[in-house]
Length: 126
Image 1 (tube, one colour):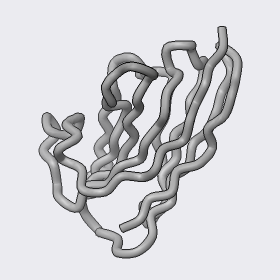
Image 2 (cartoon, helix red, strand yellow):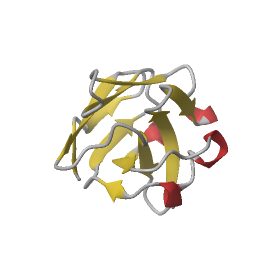
Image 3 (cartoon, helix red, strand yellow):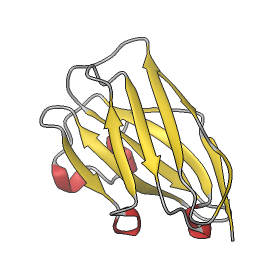
Image 4 (cartoon, rainbow, N blue to C red):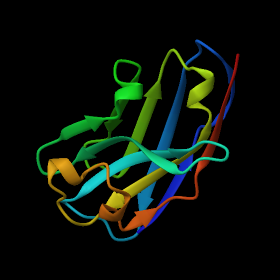
């Protein structure tokens, strides 16, 4: 499975941005598909994920109410709509896919994901 993320850029605080991630190669009818991010000098962290089997979504507290995850019907393309962006949202955003069916509590764990995209940089200026 190859994941190609795009849509990053330089925006101002309060602006919106939409990221996309296209999955190609082998795809899975089950599993999970989501976004993580890594701020400069920090470890990569969970942002949001959607589990395919039940379309259940889980958001990090820091982005609830501002970010929305969506996908096409086949879940081959994943989107991340980001609104009211803050400087602390700055980082490289990675899409990730799991071929398994992680339980809800395991969804934020990076070890649950088998495939990673190359990342797209989002910079939010104050």
